[in-house]
Image 1 (cartoon, rainbow, N blue to C red):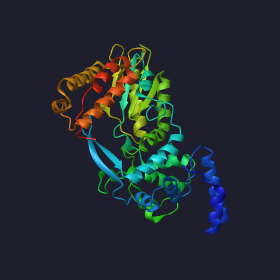
Image 2: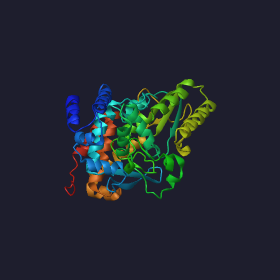
Image 3: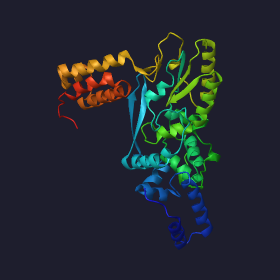
Image 4: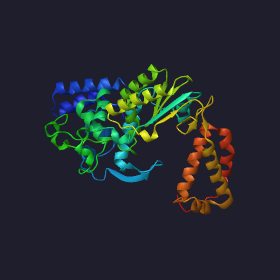
Length: 384
């Protein structure tokens, strides 16, 4: 990222006939942002130069007028139903990666947020609940799509960016459904006619629909953490009041107690308080995924067993991975992919190596011999 020089900005602005007071105010605001380790972004045009993406493309995205901004496709959920995934077009992806790297990575989420954070991992998140006696797990429905453009705007505003720039950054990191979506019948997702003006009063930016975080955009994970900071503080306070530990990994909330006499009534009270907090924050809990595990019950956090001093892989996971590797070695990739209903050999290979990498992070002694076997498989060169 090239450094921003205030003296050049001022001299160029004066040469273009801009008021000296306006330029000096902009410089002061930019320096405040830079003092926080963030890049100066004075206008959308300034951002386009930072990123190397045409200004008009960014403006189209901000105006919600670029139909090619995202490619959408459904992905089946393990629990049933479908999840909508958004893939940004290349230049928007480039912009979002820049924002993620230079802006969002320099902002700090709440300490209880353990996903999408430097030096964090599923292992470390689960480790905080090891040897617990009681475990409570709560899930947020449609997590990313429940985080609004307004909440994202506040993240950038609180980071120190001017209102118009914060608004434009929020628009670049959120998207909307079709105008006919039932979502826009709800007040939270639609602006009233008298409140459709935006910072700077740019009429072309007006849209009655309130955007949401698109799952698949590189900015969405870190933005979700930053938006959830206030929620995490309140949820942690609920947990601490009962002597519990609280963590959140994206949409998965885990609360644990090491007291054997904690009791089901207290656990149910924690669940009620968390549900109320979610709904008050604009989220919906998923009751079907709510779990209260008492002493003696199997306790799993983020897919890992937490019944000992360190997180462990589940027996089912180990058996499944061993069966895949055995099938590949015995029958070869083509037949194994057919038997296990994989749509492509390349997709199967990527999936299995992903599982193996995950296993190595948790139990290297188990994973090491499997990697040797998997590496010995001869893969047909039919796909990249």
